[in-house]
Length: 210
Image (cartoon, helix red, strand yellow):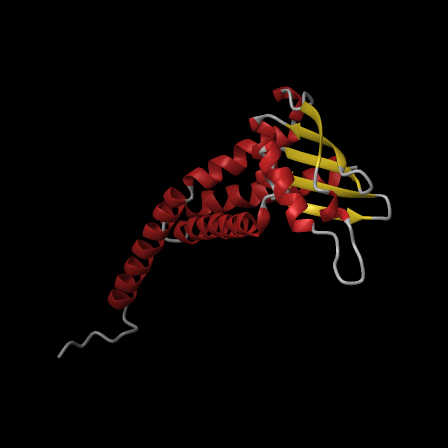
């Protein structure tokens, strides 16, 4: 029977080594799994901060017109305006994409807005005649990436991807900090560096943000 108690120095060292190995494994593979995510949000942080560097002020706009079935636009006590038929007709007729973010009906016209990352399509439809005017605005690839960064008009599933990505980056940072405590030669220098970096970002907010 071993005389070594669970709290003995040797047992504590072995436990510390196992924890350090686990944390190192987590840090490495969390960082590698999230490599593309970290790179994406880092790069789009720059494009968001400097949109004019990438020609984002140049939009491609198309104006088209047409007509739809007038019966879809009629409403009565028994039935309402057929919003689904109208939206699907416009989508198929003009190859629109994005989700329908707004469908507004008044006495004289209907307004339908399709929205997606870097994309918008707005249709004004005359209820009396069925004629419509459609404006489609498309931005470049960088604008699409910027909207994905912000989660703008990208749907609830992409919003979940952003949440998971944020959690992944937070775990990567925390495991890196925990791992530092097991590196005796670099512990003090690493903690001082982290403190300086944290102080710098707080100071930038206090002194540089109007």
